[in-house]
Image 1 (cartoon, chains in turn orange, brown):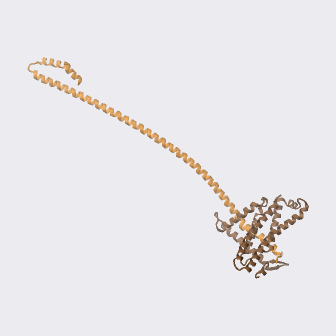
Image 2: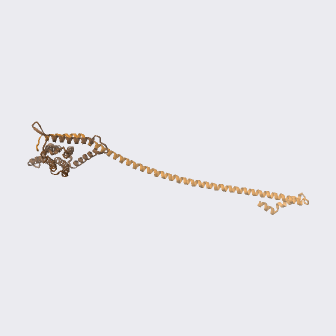
Image 3: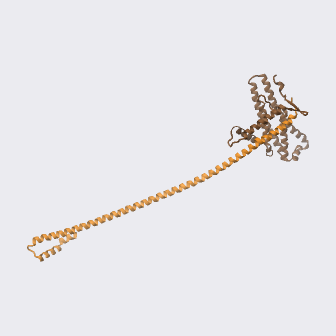
Length: 166
Length: 221
């Protein structure tokens, strides 16, 4: 039945023993482990936060670099376009000048050839005329008369105009 | 009725002029061995991501620490491991009675009185540590010396009520299971055992919370 005896004291000793054993096998290792894990998690959170800040900084830096590169590329393209347009204008202008020069040269050459042809034609015409006239008049005209006729011919206003035209 | 003659009976050995309930002591050792084994299994190879028994014990320890920490006074915080041990010991002791062939150590008044005495000692220790021994003892004659007997009685009645509440519930549970087992063959004894499990958990929690309250009161000015 219910009675208080040595079991009471044995139970107190047993409980104190239990507290000591749980302290060694449960509370101390568990407390140490939980503390270490808490520190690890706290450290990981801090590192993650630092990494996040670093990533944000790098992103900003990267975006700034990209924007800068984009501006530089835009400048390069604009410069290239300007340079290309300038080169094109120069080439076109040069070509125009060259064409004009060629045309002028050709015109000059053509005019020279034409003049030369006309001069040759006039000389031949004169020579032919003289020849023809001399043959016609050789029988009736002496040397002096021939020279006189030639001079008259040379001074003839019609022939002179012809020579001007040539 | 079958088994009724065994209710409250103990295997007794005599040491010197006193007696010892050998069955109670052995059941207490079984509980201690179980608790230490579970603690050892849970803490021998702890992993960062807990699983299995480590997870369960971590949950239990954190729940105990949180529950006790939320209710105990800051000055009595160092008493947490002892109070947590009280809860674990009483819980395992209460549940052991449900296992066939085993008896709840807490169905023996010697054990519950011993546990209540531990709480009384813890209360006195926490009060003396917090206020200083002299101030703590002077607290017994406040508001005036006429209250000394009342305060002393209060300490002992607290201890006795703690012990008898637990003992009464566990003993009554054992008696109820035996009686129902004799009266009804099926289902009802099982339900009674399930209820005994519930009562066992509840009584462990109650003992813990009352211990927290007593220790906290002792440390407050």
